[in-house]
Image (cartoon, rainbow, N blue to C red):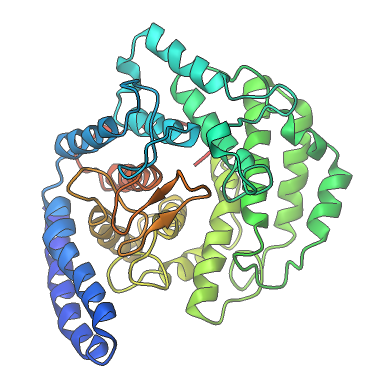
Length: 403
């Protein structure tokens, strides 16, 4: 009842925002005006009804139907990225596995089916570094990026194997060089921790990838060297906090800098959250994170905020926010926005009104087309928010190093 009342208030505010936005968008090009209006109408007609009358079984059925539509060769473990694609890839298989796990469907697979999926994943893993290489995804980005590619995929694979109740065929040895703390220090000292970390500086994704794999090796292989490396990284990062923000880097002065600073912090804080580390300056972090929320409920500089921007702020607010009315209202407003990113086919978009290119040409989606990356990340947001709001759901979230 309380949630319903708050959501009704949000609905009223969105109607009021629509009127105010008319003046703002009247003078800009028609295409942009139409896109703003589309976002607002989609929230009113799609997001709000789904939030007010949230039906776990219905959204589960819709999402799993979408997953089924992306199966390749009628194999339950092979998936393509979106309806407009034709070729399967390991990334999409991992995302499908994680969505099925959140909806409690992995446990319904037979042991034979689980083994078949595990062997499929194992077939891509190399023994020398423990990373996964799919020839369908081979390009100039795959071997040497951290926002996408082999190192980035590894932390998704940790979650997928955990969902299937298995360990990879080989230990992930890519991080062994970071067992030498002198190498870590030299690497991290190469960055200006008092400066601004824009998107071209991918240290946050790289650090998250390294830290998550170290956590995995520590916890699942009882690797003491991984433990020592993690302890060193935590100590290093603790010494680089900006006391004015509680995050890392310069104090942001623009909306873009604020959004990017929160995204950067999210990638480094996720290992902290998993290890239940004490977070300094949590009040400052919450204060700035709340400021990333826009008028439509998402957390980004643009009104059509992305799945990444949304979950980055949501995770921080959920983990650090305790019995705070402002945070609760922010989360409930976000719930409406996130649900509005679901399409009629049951899948989700990464960012409304924009196409998607995710590292490779076989991982693309047209404007407003659903795809598996967004479907996994949006479902994860919904699961975390719904569980927090105590909406009647049975979402399952694995406790493993990852997201």
